[in-house]
Image 1 (tube, rainbow, N blue to C red):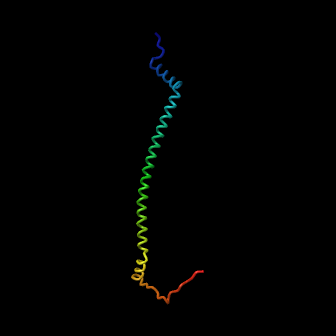
Image 2: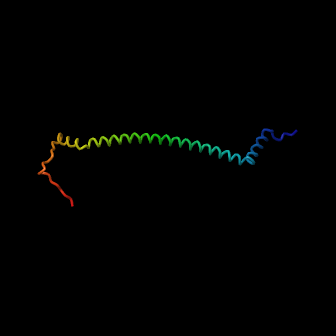
Image 3: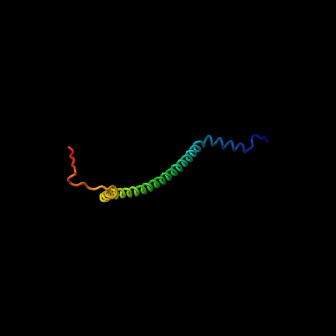
Length: 108
């Protein structure tokens, strides 16, 4: 009996040649499937991160809207005519001029 090649080496060589010859399309498709799966995972992860970021921004917007409303109310309370008049009299010692000292200016 002659010893040509061990059966293990021959089988490995046949599988490799078969894979490169006949199974090339399947290997390429398998690689594309893995790339597609990784793309889906990354897209899903990015979408979830953006959804969380959007929710955080909406919460911040609600907080800022409430603060803005409070500032508007405070501004209107501070600019109330009776408050301005009483502070001008108390703190600045201002008084309303007599009607004969009032001057009316007309613009043309």
